[in-house]
Length: 198
Image (cartoon, rainbow, N blue to C red; front, side, top):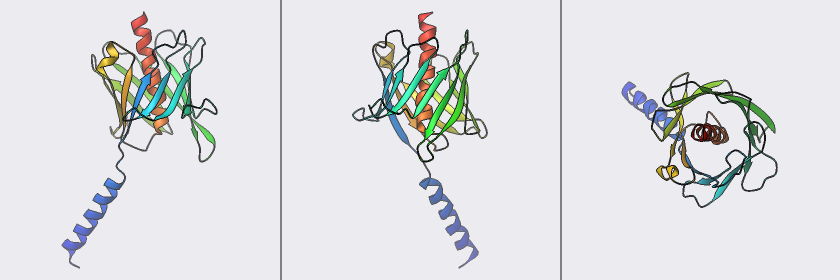
């Protein structure tokens, strides 16, 4: 085999390997129309919005507190979002259950001060990332701060301006569990609710 052939084979091997790791999972996240005095509650569907895959339930209390369940059963949460008492900016913890190891892994979410747009810094499994949206934009991206890779992104549907909130989430990497993004969106939605309610 010539050197050129060897290089070509290696290139194709790496190219195929890269594409085999490509990720593109999508979800539709719908907020309940009414949640009373509690924080927002959500159902997470497949991309067509037909099959309910996960459910986020809020607990009434002084701080934002959300439990994530697989399916519609409300037994044994697989994710937890707990806000800390904070005067202005959102600060909280996110815990995700690793079902294979039956262990909880903790992360953090903190809102950064911005005059326009929004930005949160997050950490999970020693990965620092941001959740950023520009002013007047319905799009938000999760960016790995080590290499600026976009790990996931979501779009708030324009119908949300007039009716209940709906988000289209696209996950582009396996670095962070999908459940982490669900809870981060719940935190972001909660901060928007606080802004609009004064």
